[in-house]
Image (cartoon, rainbow, N blue to C red; front, side, top):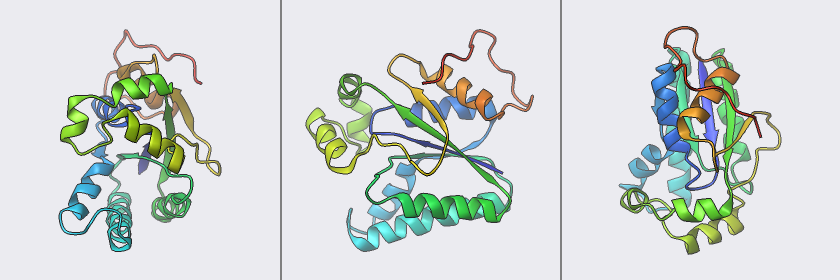
Length: 192
């Protein structure tokens, strides 16, 4: 089982790239907002109980997917100040069942993030949707940071479109396995 762990700041294109990767690979998609919305429906956002349940739900999902050999793509906003224990538990959970975690860091120019964050769909989904809030969370939480203890693929989505980013991930981690035909017009670009 493979878990493709796509992370980066708000509005970098994690879900969009992940959706394209699903089309290429047939992997299942576990968007991080599914767990957020699930827990937020009962518990107040940001409370200790809220974060505890989010972690429990995500790790339980990873464990079951790994046990049953279900290849999965997960999207995540990494907070360098607090998320290292969760990332390590994710690796342990997947490894314990014989799986592997494929890390992909998406990053983008801040000007482009500020443009993207204003999208109508983001506001409707309860995501960061203003430049002011984006600048605040980037600065306060280091949300554009790299997971330093884990190597992985890095893709600058400023000018690389989602389909091409997905193909770069699929080729880098050898996820195609001949099960889905790769579009002939997409070639891997340079890795940043």
